Amino acid sequence: MSIDKTSNTNDTNKINSLETNDILQNDDKNTIERYCDKCHECNDYNNFHKFPTTCFMIPEPGAKGATGATGPAGSPTGATGLTGATGLTGATGLTGATGLTGATGLTGATGLTGATGLTGATGLTGATGLTGATGLTGATGLTGATGLTGATGLTGATGLTGATGGILSFADFFALMPSDNEATVAVGADVSFPQDGPTSGAAIARTGPSTFNLSAIGTYQVLFQVSVTEAGQLILTLAGADLAYTVAGRATGTSQIIGMALVTTSTSNSILTVRNPAGNSTALTITPLAGGTRPVSAHLVIMQIA
Image 1 (cartoon, rainbow, N blue to C red):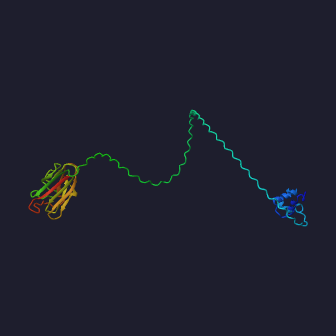
Image 2 (tube, helix red, strand yellow):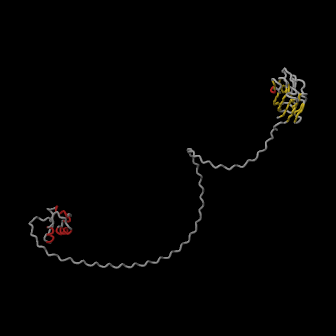
Image 3 (cartoon, rainbow, N blue to C red):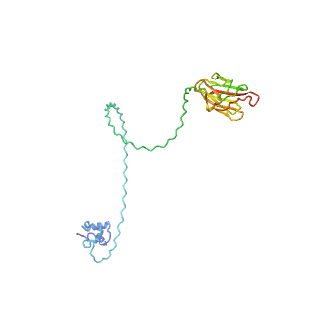
């Protein structure tokens, strides 16, 4: 280490005045560097007191000298010079004129359309996919408006005319007592109705006082009423046979025997009679002037209804 502490009295005094724990200022650092060529190696100005045996900056203890006289004050600091004026900014150059726009080039001709390529072969049909699950049934839609009424259909053909209803023919045969039926009507004999009442023609006609011809096959309504004196019965016969379902009778008194029935013929020209049935015990007296002074009538009315 090379040290020359006497080369500068002011620096020496300054170094000697540093305490070991002082923080060096920049001018202190400069002072040390002038006297110690190892300061850069130490590189620790503020911790120089850590090296008391090697650093020259720690003086050897000696007697404290007397305080020197205060030196004269330094001359005042000179005035700061004036700042030079800023130079002028040069003028901006003029903008050059815009060049003319070049003319638009001609549009090139459209190229020819290329030939259509060949159609590729149809690919194989893929396998049919599985049937999806059936979806839920949708809600029932609203009822549609009622459609217009259709046109009226054509009138159907007229049906066949049905059989004529009502009475096809009729005849009324009667007797007046007295003088008709003066003799009693024996068992198995027929009552006489010798007189003709209203008739519709020849379909129902008499063949004798007590026999009457039904010329057409059909159904006839037959009514009879006869006043008799005794208790007895009367029956209709057709072609000589008794019609058992037509019996009418009276048990006592002198009132009329009245009968009514429907008779159906199966052959034309069937003969009808009103008879005192066989097997009875009493001949019948057809009562004359029954209940008064006038002759009493007995009637046989026949009507063809089918």
